[in-house]
Image (cartoon, rainbow, N blue to C red; front, side, top):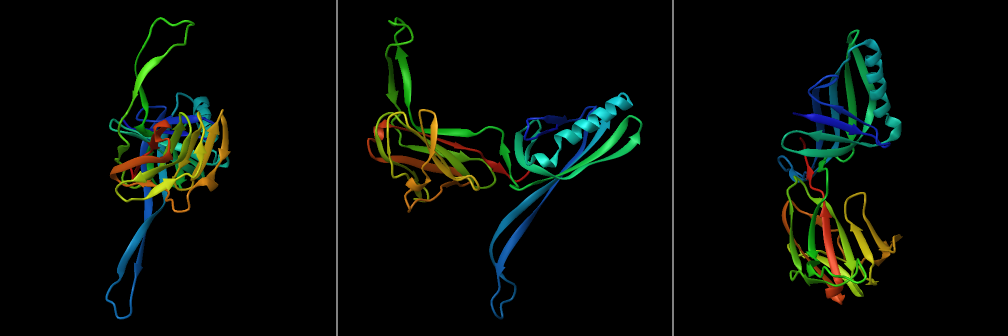
Length: 288
């Protein structure tokens, strides 16, 4: 069963599926590819340089099947309220038996209603996704280095205290698999158990890296985001976030996940054993 859900900025949502009263009749999307070429003097044809994908236009066609005219008016009002372009971007969520994905979009024309009879209307809803790709609902994650608990003692005085015995995962390298259709950014968290000097992450495949020229203190978490339009570097200490973008080493690259396997290695100039690293990512897909 296919289902479309739209959630606006206020958290208001509406569902369209294969059943009344809000019956999904059709869903289509259209995206343009810009192809870049170069042509030399006396050259037959041209030389391909690359391409980019433009914003994606999406169209939802539904039928409102109400029990009476009052319910019909209520459904129309709800659609207008949820699909309010003045609220800015919202999330369109697509679900079928195989997958559930979402994309951020904005309504580019007001819902268009046509009457079939006194209790049935058809409605056409159009929206535009500035980012043309669909994404998984939840982030995936890969932990490069962490401490794992092994066992503890049941008898503790006082309660909720005591010592838990654990071990540190030995690997410094993790394989992050991007099953999406295109490259995507990452969100990395560096957690300092004690002092850590200048933590970094290296892409083993490309030898690109990102390094943070900063001495971390115990309990500090550094959050790095390399996604287009959302690049940032923040330090979180005691629940307080601080922008530390200027601590990024000038030779660094904002690492991206290529499709398929990506080998990442973490490092630090001093006290590497005090560092835990987790990589979060959201694969992106061309369509549904």
